[in-house]
Amino acid sequence: MAGRGRKPKADAIRRAHQASPARVIEHSSLPMPGEVAGNPLMAECWEWTVEGATHLTTADIPMVTLLVQWWAVARQCAANIASASGGVVTKVDTPMGPRQDPDLRTLQLATNQVRQLSSELGVSPVARDRMRLMKVATASMAADLPAKIYRILEGHDGD
Image (cartoon, rainbow, N blue to C red; front, side, top):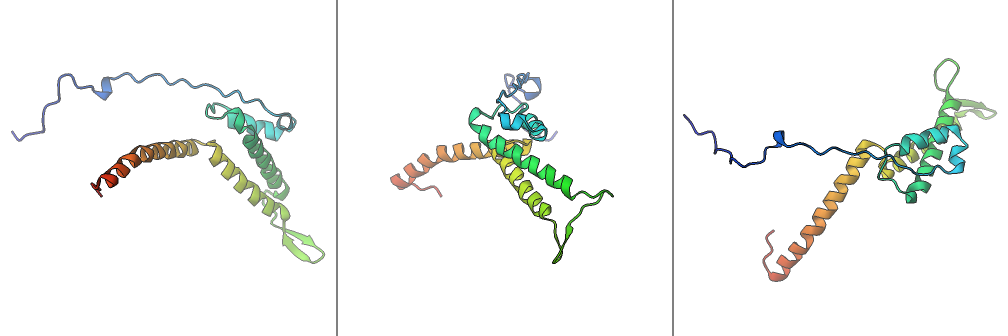
């Protein structure tokens, strides 16, 4: 019989038999500012953003407030350009002829701001994973840098 590799050690830890620790999900308790609470659209977005977001702190309140304000602007612009027939109005008639609806440009700006702030705050799972990856990469580079400097100073550059 051909060799199939070495035998596993008897005391080896096997992943399938390990019990994974329970993951505790805490809910964020960021206080909602009064200006957000007074606007139903902004309050709804605030709840979506901070629900279960344990990485947000009180220092993030101004950024989350900006996020929900831009989100409310985007919703309002989307409502303004929606036509009664279910389409989207992109041009408006002016005395100088048809022009692009100003709400369309504002919607584009608001959407970009929401995307950037969401990424900065780690609102979506993808953004949180990206933040974790950057943190690990930075820590790895910081740990590796002194060793590289030491090798260079000793004249044993391994690159």
